Length: 46
Image 1 (cartoon, rainbow, N blue to C red):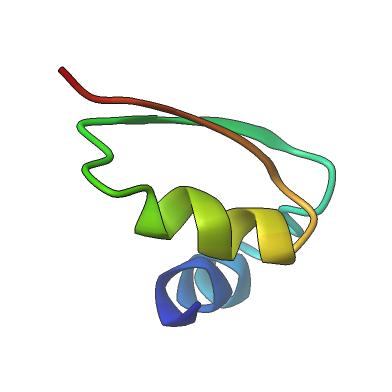
Image 2: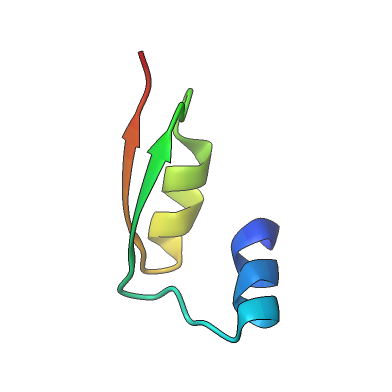
């Protein structure tokens, strides 16, 4: 996912193994893409 890759590049941070919370995730697209990069992603939407 371009967003994750751009943040990793700018921050110099590798997100693999990180945990993230996506609030307002809708269908979970960000969570799915983050998980593909090795991120433990949690999503909540009401």
